[in-house]
Amino acid sequence: MTRRNVILRIENVSKRFESLRAVDDVSLAVPEGHIVGLIGPNGSGKSTLLNVTSGVLRADAGRIIFDGQDIVHRSADEIFQLGLARSFQDPSLFFRMTVLDNILLPIKEQDGEDPIRAPLHRTWEKQEARFATVAAGALQRLDLDTHFDSLASDLSGGQMKLLELGRSLTSAPKMLLLDEPTAGIAPNLARNIFEQIEHLRRTRGLTFLIVEHRLGLLFDFVDQVYVMHLGRLIAHGPPADIAANAKVREIYFGE
Ligand SMILES: Nc1ncnc2c1ncn2[C@@H]1O[C@H](COP(=O)(O)OP(=O)(O)OP(=O)(O)O)[C@@H](O)[C@H]1O
Ligand SMILES: [Mg+2]
Image 1 (cartoon, helix red, strand yellow):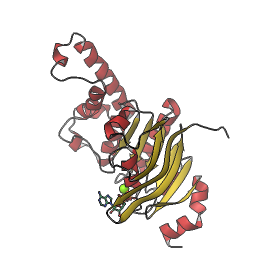
Image 2 (image 1 turned 135 degrees about the vertical axis):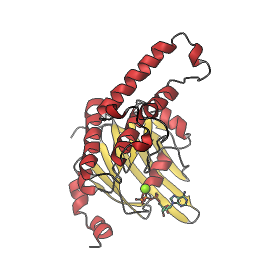
Image 3 (image 1 turned 45 degrees about the vertical axis):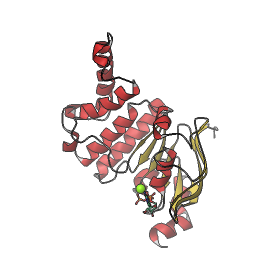
Image 4 (image 1 turned 180 degrees about the vertical axis):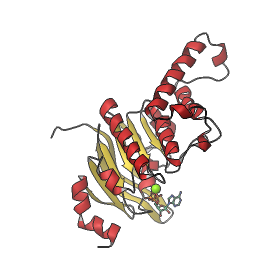
C-alpha cells in the first residue's frame, strides 16, 4: 500500500458541555484523497467533533493539524479559508433565496466582493460572468441546473442535501467534513450523493470525513471507519473489519 500524507490529524481532542464529556480524548488521522467514515450511536459526539474541527466550537484540549497547520485556535472562517469546508446535519441553506443565489453567495464571499464598490468596478461584468460559469458548472454536476431559479425551500430533501454539497464545493476546498449527507432522503438519492462524493475524490483528489448513519451505504464508499461511543473512539479500521468488530456490534445491535 502506498503511504499517503495525512491531511487532517486530530490529537487528543476533548470537548465538554458542563459535566458531559461530549468528545473525550479523541485522536484520528485522515490521509489525503481518502474517504473516511465516522460512525456511532446518537449522542456519541460525532457532530461535536466536526464542530470542533471546523472551528464552530472551541476544543478544551488537544491539537488539530490540517494541511500542516495547527488550526485548533483558528476561527471557523480562517479554517474555511485554509480549505477545510463542512456541511451541517440540518441543511444550512438560505431557504428564501433561489438555488442559483445559494450557490453564488459563497463564490462571491470567497472572491472578497465588496457589495458597495463592486458595481463601480471596471471588471465587474467579467467577474459576474466568471461567477455564473462556476455556479452553472456546480449546478450541472449536481443535476440541479433545471432548478436554478427555484426557491431553495421548494427543493426536495435530497436536492437540498445536494445543494448544500454544491455550496461547500464552490469555495474550492481541499477537504470536506460532511455531517449526515443523506439524512432524511430516499435510498436511491442517498447512493447518488455518495457517487458524487466518490466522483469528487477521483476527479479532484478531495478528501472527506463523513458522519453517516446508513452504514451499508457508507461502507461501500469509505477506505476506513472510526467508531465513537459516549465521546470516545472505540474502534478504527477498514469497513469489513468494523462490520465484524464485536464491540461495534454490541453498541449497534446489542449483541
Ligand atoms: N451545544 C450543546 N450543549 C450541550 N450539550 C450538547 C451540545 N451539543 C451536543 N451536546 C450533547 O453532547 C453529546 C454529543 O452530541 P453530538 O451532537 O455530538 O452527537 P452525535 O454523535 O452527532 O449524535 P447524532 O447521531 O444524534 O447526530 C450529546 O449528549 C448531546 O446532547
Ligand atoms: Mg450529529
